[in-house]
Image (tube, rainbow, N blue to C red):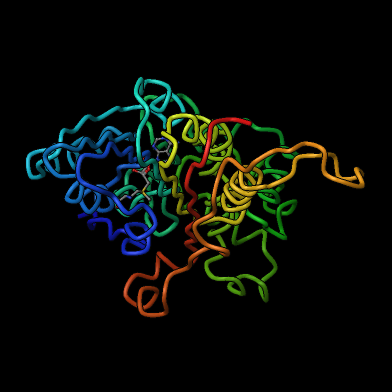
Length: 308
Ligand SMILES: C[S@@+](CC[C@H](N)C(=O)[O-])C[C@H]1O[C@@H](n2cnc3c(N)ncnc32)[C@H](O)[C@@H]1O
């Protein structure tokens, strides 16, 4: 049975968002509704929670939540970039908890995990066409190698891509595991955790267009906020965190003059106030209780004014 999802950095997220009765909040990644429940409980009967997820199974969590909390609720089944576009009102809070849920990883047949033998799928949205099988079986060798290097930081990317293309067609996660293990030299096989970890991560990011989604959604999330509203994102991968960090740092920058100007002439004022100087990471206690939280980083900001 898939286990329920334990929300990561939950106390820290609530502290950053500081939800108030009557506010409107958007959860861009509902999942098992762990964070959403904590937020919804603080919004009270006058508040509204809008929940987005592209995985239809999140709707079960939504229905349970909607039956138990006092606030108004709405579910948008969509990727978060298009979900945010469907919101016509300005809101007080927008947050996202990126990556996959424990329910997705632990539902064997969805093929997210190298620990279970399953078809090579990895789609968060089962209606989309691109699957892990298509990447593994049809992409050119060099394209696969680049994917593994960029999204998985896999040092043996070329060797793994060669082995994958040599063994085609691959149809299951264990066939992919075998190709990866055979490609990595024996002494290095278990040096950085499970040998398939980085390759699975890279393929999953590509199947779900995760970085493109984030690039598209960040400006939409920010536009959707009222002045005084708060944005927060929890990321699990340095490529995601870098995007969130840069996006918020640009909004919080005082001066937008070109770097070679000797004095500031822009008179610009920042659009955002960063709520923390550095990203917030889980405590050792949280990591011990929930190892999945290990790579999590929270960043948050308050909107000070509209676009400069
Ligand atoms: C880490 S889980 C969220 C868990 C949730 N915060 C909780 O406490 O239960 C991420 C969820 O976001 C969804 N998701 C990831 N990327 C998405 C995207 N681009 N658009 C919509 N949903 C997305 C996944 O389907 C998954 O259900």
